[in-house]
Length: 128
Image (cartoon, rainbow, N blue to C red; front, side, top):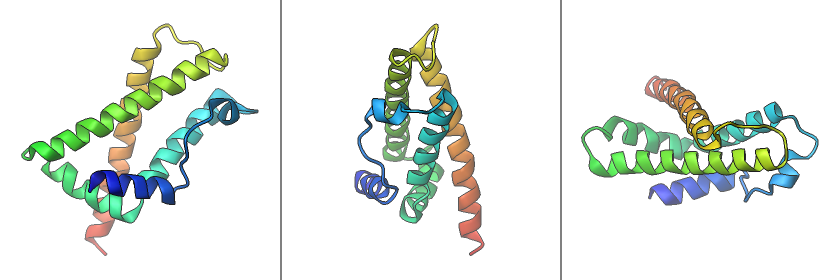
């Protein structure tokens, strides 16, 4: 179910496979990072996926399947961020002393921000 909702949300948010050369064209590193994070936020704020996250986040400490889904999504974020950072290094948009560590830090910071937005949206849903 999670995979289905995630793919449907990607489709609804118009997220397609990334061509880094096209993504970077005429943009600063800040604009690229801001756009990537905004795309991820848009994908995760589809109503059905938000409702699913509401359940998953509340159950992750007691349900192994929920914890696995959270861990898989975190791993996806880290891998995608590493790929982005390697491409930004190759295209000379940014330089990293340790791209892997920078990617993990960025992904986790972005995830924290997303979790706060999910919790905020969850609160809004409770009062609707």
